[in-house]
Length: 364
Image (cartoon, rainbow, N blue to C red):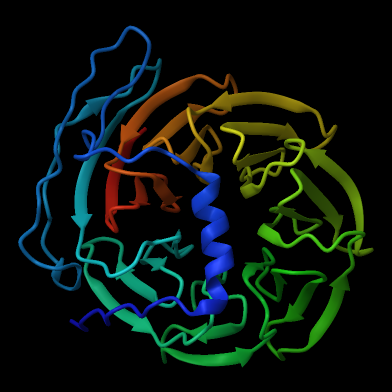
């Protein structure tokens, strides 16, 4: 097993972005961590459960780190959530998590390192030698053979770069067919051909607002991006023009967004404590679901029935997408920075400010 490399100190050029994110989720710190998770629903009984502390670092986590009590999701037709593994010993906070589309791997990024894990065992496999100034996010290709940062496309088999792209790129998104890669950060948004590394399109915007998140719709017709101005722009990929703008908030940062698997809905989260669900056909707001602090991340379950949100209020909450009803709240020890569903929907991975990664089993 390849040892995890120690994470490096953040470079000075990355500090403004980090300070902005920290300021957006000002949750008061307490002397000791809160219970790591609980059911937190009206009329339910809170079940605090401390996560078992492993005796080995995150680079040696091939064994199960600890099994927590099974928590029933108090919702009709719902199943159970179970803590499967806790990965500890990181030298930096994890800001992005994702599973490969084939379900073989999940990956974590913490500003200057991208680590690849075996999804079944939780074993650390290798770390890509990124060496980028500010690793904000990454994306797997649809065939699971490539992983892209905002600046480089990597071949997982060789663990080597296959294409060098925009040296200023921050947020990547593969098109559904894997032929193109959209990269945002500042303006403009750029679309690259994956096979050749050639720049195909640039999407110019009226403002100079940096982008926090970017995603293709499942049919590849739309590209959504969000930023500091509280708006989400929906780009027509064919024309390169903004077809619609959604007002998530007045001047709040929109940190993350995700399309539903069938492309009917878009979910957005930001610093205003709200999870907002939008109808793609009409642009109408369908649901508003709330936390008690700002949010970092959001994801749809693969069947589109649930939305998972990661918040500075120290919880991951699972919501029924159709009704907006909260199904369960998974309490962490500190602000939750990232989450992702596995392709089959049976695993959920999350990370928090305690520099830990948690792997949860979800039984529908």
